[in-house]
Image 1 (cartoon, rainbow, N blue to C red):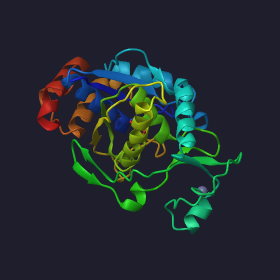
Image 2 (cartoon, rainbow, N blue to C red):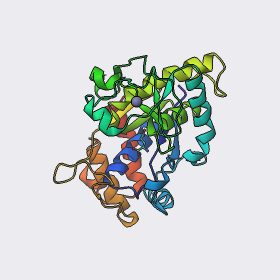
Image 3 (cartoon, rainbow, N blue to C red):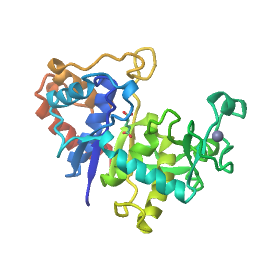
Length: 292
Ligand code: GLU
Ligand code: ZN
């Protein structure tokens, strides 16, 4: 089997205990399957980017001996691909301009109702939305099994390019996973529902590939595995927004021990304090007993 996984942090802050679990989970899955593990820095949102965060993330990964394969992929370098995909989608009416404001969408019920689909305008101040006709509403998650997403969410025409001209995460992540030939996605469960959007867009990319409208070849959709969300003591998601503290290099061993525990791999007490390499080897060996 050709296996290529990735860890795709945004440089909006250093890694915290929650992002370490996602990094470790995707690393262990790749290594347990004899696969590659790539690092992609998702730096397409300059207003949210924190100076120095990308370098800090790399140093944190190295301190935990989570060594990636090949060169770092800096997502902003994919912008020509994003443009090409967006233009191809617009050309075949699989994407359209939308001028609705957040307040207007909310007043019409909250989920985007396709209001601008037929208006066929091309204003300067507009977002671009995906014509979500595929209606993917379920997928198979390797850990949770069949995930059924509520139809009003699954069928929404989600945003591909924002009104402020920044690329939306959904477009960027799908185009990069596609063109980087990512076969396995392992990430946090906060992205469980948007996976159906990503699969729907993936199908459109496959159609474009088949009709030679894109520079990259046909690519099968990845296998998905969503890891349990990490909550803090107050039951809130560990996140940069909630000011989760950065993981420290000097505590690499303890951080890895705790991340292995959170992944349900039950490291034995005698590994408490062990070197990162030893903890990672234990994780690689135990991984298949818990995740397949
Ligand atoms: N940059 C995204 C994040 O940090 C990546 C999500 C993904 O792995 O698809 O949440
Ligand atoms: Zn609209």
